[in-house]
Length: 492
Ligand code: NDP
Ligand code: HEM
Image (cartoon, rainbow, N blue to C red):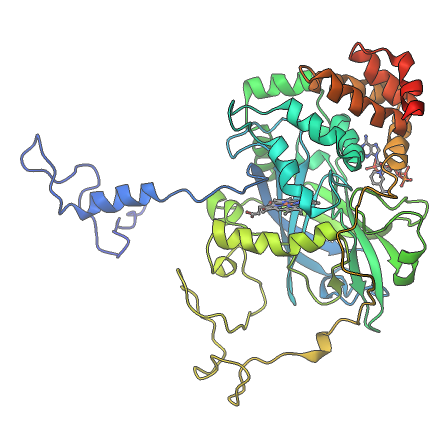
């Protein structure tokens, strides 16, 4: 082996002894001038940054998206511009509720956050392994998350809080049904689908707008644990996802997903019987079939987990020409929330960190602040304000989106009026086999243990409205009189 590099201080000065602190005599005390020891201890004190307020536990890897089908009739986005084109990406999976040290094999929704390093900037698609969500108005997101985190007094998670909130929020029923089904506890990240979940927009070269939903279908097949199997896994290892994902990629097993889209012409949004911008609903495949786009593959582990996965900053506000937002109220709130979180969690210039940096040159006029370590050369030191007459970076009107017609009086509209929260949850229940339905209802009954009976009754009515067998099945498992259910609902 060749001679190792010389150990240095952060200022580059060689360190002669990294074993023994500097002391007055062999027994001490220590000398304040031991700047090498002070530097070491001070750095240790600063090794942690705040964990993500949600989705704190995660696993990630790098890979590529390869385009296999032409969708340029819908979008001019550079990454879809020609067959065979590959775009580098980062994919971070996560659970929602657990802290950074939480066990991997817990029942929870999984995050599926993508950063595509396109030639026209980074496109982040920050989705989940479910096509829908628990709430449809962002005013309710912090309340929902409260119910998933620890009780302020007991510091324990509270099934009562969860079911109290869900039973008072019928829009959650669809997502609760997915969470409690087999798909609520995947064996590892490669055995689950990913969804952009929200409706986004595509804009093509003729500046026409389409509404779009993104799907990533696992090519490894779906694999799930039962609750009992999950508990056994956790008893042996809290890191089963990291072991499977990191270990698999190290061994050359590269997981893949088929990327597909559903596309809706802009004008159709006024015609569908459901609000196509409601995050608690899917677009039925029968109405809007899946269109193939490409294949996503993960094939490279991060070299440093903290630098490349923990400091990764995904934001729905990162869009690129050809891909845009939609009126979905949840998406609108997320456009604000993520970059705000990153400035707090990582720091002002988080987008200059290598993992977050676009591959194409970024030219902006943001200036100073903590950790301004990067160059942002515009080729001219006088170009530090805009407009200027020194040929500094200038706007490009070609990238303007077509105008979007909006209407209506500004008001706080009750999102629980006129919304069908039951049909799609019922359709999901009915597409399950009898065994899958049984496990779904067993999981619900297990999760409801210890919850006050008034809350259980309120929730069982929602299950019944989705499908009578669903309501009666859960009621029976909870020792309630299922025979009373139809009359109770009819009497409301
Ligand atoms: P389809 O029969 O065309 O599609 C059913 C979908 O359900 C498939 O995408 C399938 O995913 C997925 N699925 C199957 N079992 C489960 C489960 N236990 N948990 C979650 N998803 C599951 O029907 P529709 O499009 O008419 O939708 C019917 C219902 O299917 C919806 O109400 C919704 O609950 C659910 N669904 C619909 C999706 C959509 O975008 N339309 C997406 C996902 C779920 P896969 O192909 O991977 O097996
Ligand atoms: C993470 C807010 C809804 C998926 C986060 C973070 C915040 C946040 C603040 C932490 C970001 C960070 O520190 O890096 C919100 C708000 C929501 C919302 C305010 C609703 C109004 C959703 C929805 C989805 C989602 C609907 C999926 C469809 C994710 C994922 C992460 C995340 C995957 C982790 C990203 C990563 O891996 O770094 N969310 N969220 N969130 N959220 Fe949301």
